[in-house]
Image (cartoon, rainbow, N blue to C red; front, side, top):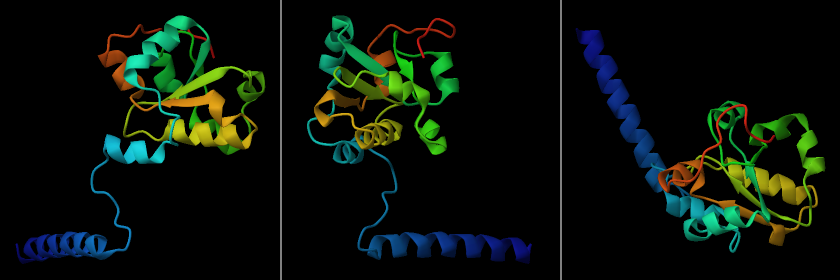
Length: 160
């Protein structure tokens, strides 16, 4: 019983010390993710508002890029979206990138405000020569699309 008390005290002390050190750090780590933190990470002017997303999708003039894993994409995605998982860049440039038109508006999305995969893909595409004014990020992501009643394309019916 004494050992359990010591372990508990050690864990509580460690957690307190870690929180205190974080609070005193020049740039403390956030304890919880929030949409506001994501908004700061998204380049100014590149975020797509939920209110304009459906109009962009209905126009058919925009290509949607799903930055989530292939598994998440196969379970459901925005109809017509291309799967370009952010982790695919770990092995170099994915083949799909060569097929994406550089003169068309691309909207990149992932799970939602606490997901940064879309920003990773955005930055990789910039590095590969895509122009900033042709790349947008939907920070509401898949979660917001479904919440707003957007159409869902199930496994086996998607592009990508």
